Length: 190
Image 1 (cartoon, rainbow, N blue to C red):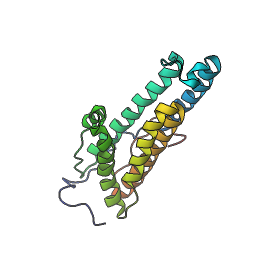
Image 2: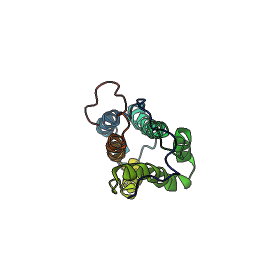
Image 3: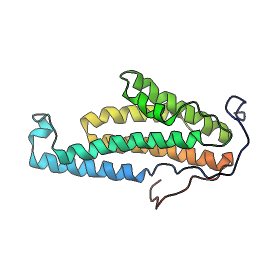
C-alpha cells in the first residue's frame, strides 16, 4: 500500500503521548466471571438450561451487562486514540463509534465500517494489509449472536476480536512514528 494520502494526513507530526489503549484483559476477566456465573446459575436453577426461566439471576446478568458496556468503552477508547494521532484525520468520532451500535440493523453494517476505518490507518502505516477488518467484523458478529446462546463464550470471542484490533493498532502506532499510548497499570494480556 502507498503511504496515506492528503485526505488522511493533516498537519505536522508531534511527539505528544497518546491516551492509553483499552485494557482488554478486563474483558477477559468479565467473560470468565460470566462463564462461572453461568455454571452456578445452571447448577442452582436447572430450568435456565432448558429455557424455562426467561429472566436470568442478577449474578448472571451483571457480568454480561458490564462486559457489553466495557466492550463499548473499548470501542470508544480506540476512537479516542485514533482521533488524537498527530497527522492523521480519523473520520469517526468516539461518541459516534459507540452510538451507532444502538441503531437496529445499521449496527450490523457499522461494525464493519469502524473496523474498516481503523484498518485503513493500520494497513497504510504498516504498508501491507496486516489488519483484516472483515475477519474481525465476522468474529464480532458471531460473538454477538453467540452471546444469546452462551453469554460467557460470546463475551470471550468478543474480546478476542477486540484484542486483535488492539494488537494491530498498537503495531501500527509503533511504525507510524508516534509515541506508544501511555500505560495505566499492568497489562498482563494485551
